[in-house]
Image (cartoon, rainbow, N blue to C red; front, top):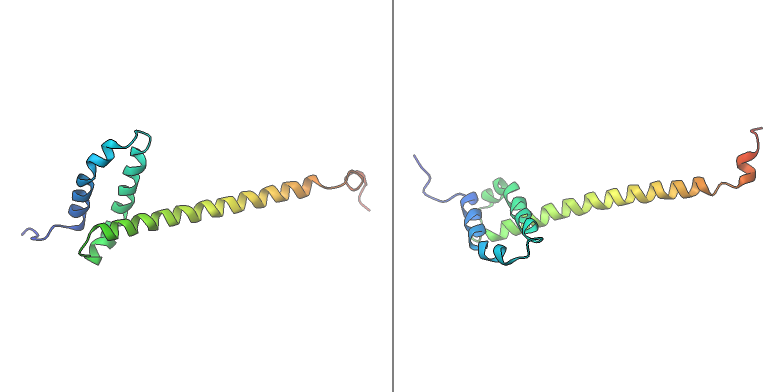
Length: 105
């Protein structure tokens, strides 16, 4: 027996279809970014469907925010690690020549 109510994934597809003209009007370089936003929303479709919100755009936008927040956190962690390695390299490079050439006692 089939479902009488459309699924959240169906609603998300309908939203994407309504935004198709907007996507086509975007510059070619921006279209993959637009597509990625809907991919983020699809990745959380199960949770969004459980929410059963009256406006399916709200959980889609929240899903996009959630994915972007995770990406931002990942970038911040990577940046922190790179800065730490750079600081270590600077510290190692600042060893005076006299100390570096002296034999251990």
